[in-house]
Image (tube, rainbow, N blue to C red; front, side, top):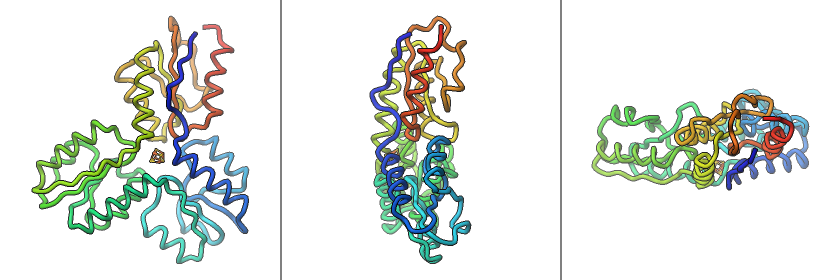
Amino acid sequence: MEILLAKEYGFCFGVKRAVKTVEETAASANGPVYTLGPIVHNDEVVAQMQALGVQAKDSIDEIDEGTVVIRAHGVPPETLDAARNKGLRVVDGTCPLVIRAQQLARALHDDGCQVVIYGAPEHPEVVGIAGWAGEGSVVVQSLEDVAALPRSKKIGVVSQTTKIPADYQAVVGAAMGKCQELRAHNTICNATAQRQTAAVEVAQQVDVMLIIGEAHSSNSRRLAEVCAQVNPRTYRIATADELETAWFVGAERVGVTAGASTPDAAIERVVAWFQTQRI
Ligand code: SF4
């Protein structure tokens, strides 16, 4: 069995930076250290953080003292204010590319645009961007959502960083029909696009394609979607424990990639699994 790894996979620079920020903060802080939500959507990494004494909390309401680290997804400005008003030390691990999307959304709002954010409304990154975009911003998930928007004089559009570029282009095109003036910023992250391109390249060459990433990792799910479009034998798994030999019957080549929140150790365990099997 030949294993083909995608050229780009696993932790993106924003996640590496956020994890390093938590590790450095845990090593130097006086008092308890928290992250607002899990630092990445990966149970193994969350367990590593817990071993360093860092606890994940869902809300500032649950934190009364110490340091709170903002993860790569970012938060609305109200959350930063709430933390500072409680006297908490805030260490901002927001990915610089997410900060750019937040700032562009705010600038569009300040310029009088109806701000439209393409993304999943419940995703923390989108919640954060919507907070920076201020009152009146809307989140759209589909062309149908765009079609339902009222007409506006000026519309400004940004995207969740992990969206598929072609889908975002279609949303921007549809928004054009809803206004006199349209401003659209490309806020899709290159790391995401590069991982998707590299994953599809491999998926086209192999019998079976594996995506390593947890179900609640949106970029891992996207990788599985784009690979499944070119290779129906695509499987997303959280860990090597979920692998099933039946998936690989008759397969000579297997492709492997991983979401931006998947640590290298999880990928290595999947590759090692094939050395222990007789398929
Ligand atoms: S996927 Fe891109 S935008 Fe998101 S954290 Fe990683 S580098 Fe930043």
